[in-house]
Length: 430
Image 1 (tube, rainbow, N blue to C red):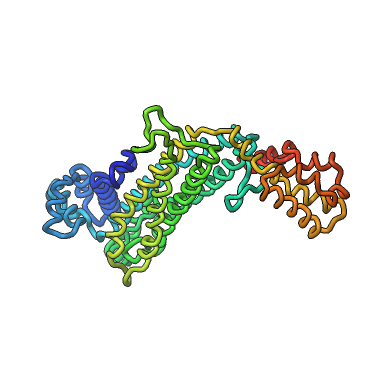
Image 2: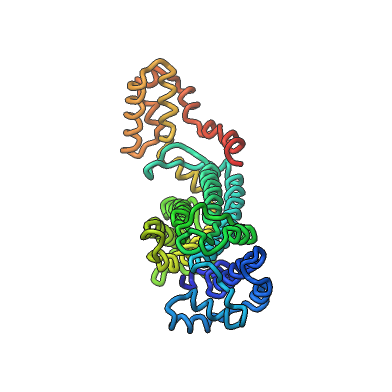
């Protein structure tokens, strides 16, 4: 991932230094258990634990000759271990180390992303409560519908990210797998007790049946969940972009004093952070299809998945972590304009009350079809002539035969809208 979208903590997980550190830890644990069950000498396990270390530069240099990263790693570490290195990587195959190590890296990144999601949930809940009673127009198809509150809008996102948090926890569990079963997964060269021991030490689960590699449906699930989270991020970002449009200006990203919105137009205050999140979401979702294609490998294994994962896993997890951090920044610092919300709510002279009037007329004895026709006729007059809906209704003699002006006034009162907001928050925003 380019530095622009990197955060140090998650980037470090994907460094060669961390990867080889994890590999070394796995190899040491394998040796410990092999010694414990009498497969290799105890002195060998002690020496491996004491002396095993690596040099990234040397491994890279060796790999140019071996054309095999694990063999280069083994040769490099063996040099430091010395005589007992003949028991290093004993009875296992490359995938045992690579895949178990990859599980740990995915788990580490998943936990960082999970932590950022927790912060986001806290921020969204706080803001939704703050604006619980801030009335605004709800929109469907981009068109005025009925009043909602900005807090309710935010509560929708809060609950969506609560679901995402649960999904991510499942995905982390899905890829927290240790597989040490030797060539083609038969355990012929490695005792199954070794796998169980290593898994317990690394707080992983053992694979049900390994085909020499950890089946990639697990990883596809993980990256699919990241794609869903990215889509939720984009949904929020698109909402901010819409609400920040000049004609609406109900919500706005924070604009710093020295910030510039355009090289040509000094007045511009663009929703650049939200637009950036839309772009990153597209990139993160692009990993979903390759991760699913990685499920389909030849027989017990091939390495067609390897090159994809080397690129995809670091970039996608780093991009999602960055996106969540940026979204947190937007939520915490966004500017909300209740007066503009009120102005936009009344823009069409009360047309948003059309359903209330429709229901009132049916209660007065009209059929739904007749009531709908009366309300729509008046609504279109107001819409097309830019007139106040209430004023138009007062001139409809057919309507006034069914409803008094006092009743009409009560129907059109905004105060009686959103009467269930407290109930929604009490029962659904937890």
